[in-house]
Amino acid sequence: MSRTYRIAPSILSADFARLGEEVRQVIADGADWIHFDVMDNHYVPNLTFGPMVCEALRRHAVRPDGTPVPIDVHLMVQPVDALAQAFAKAGANLISFHPDASTHVDRTVQLIKAAGCQAGLVFNPALPIDVLEWTLEQLDLVLVMSVNPGFGGQSFIPSALKKIEQIRRLIEASGRDIRLEVDGGIKVDNIRQVADAGADTFVAGSAIFGQPDYRAVIDAMRARLAG
Image (tube, rainbow, N blue to C red):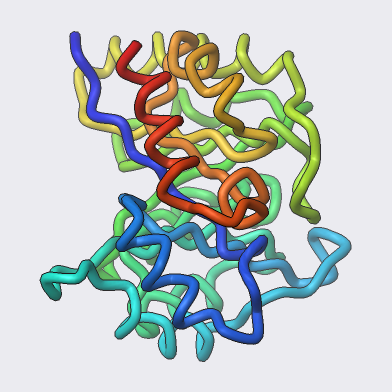
């Protein structure tokens, strides 16, 4: 079965002094989604963006023809529920969270969906995926962390490939249209291997924003995915 691939640049690696321009530029250069990393200095050892930044960027997250581009919010926060609802109001389209950060995973998923967003679960490198047995039917997205969350610019952890393969099998067995996203150390030279394991959505931060020509990197990634 052929897959539609999505490239989701992470603004964690963008120039914070001109985020609106960066978002517009990377979309013009071919981004499918904008990945929005939310860190709370509690669940992870870093502090990034709140709902007001998401709301401010919503009007910039559009293609040159004016069509909106999905904002993919990854919550690395604890507790989850109040911030998930705040980001839904701020214009997020997809909201993912870590099951070990929520007291009641099912309730949090329902809150996100009730707020009009797509819901996803995120799995850290050493976290088992057992919870998918009970939640997959409700999910729109599963995000595999191929680095430990908290900082950009880390190297890909190879054991993530096995987890991606396992989750792809579960998604195929469910028969549902669930995106399988990977975040951490994604580059032109490994994106094909990650796709072959079963991923269809790729978060890339420093690999894109760390280069002078965003379009050249995104085009090179697409060429690898098509090869």
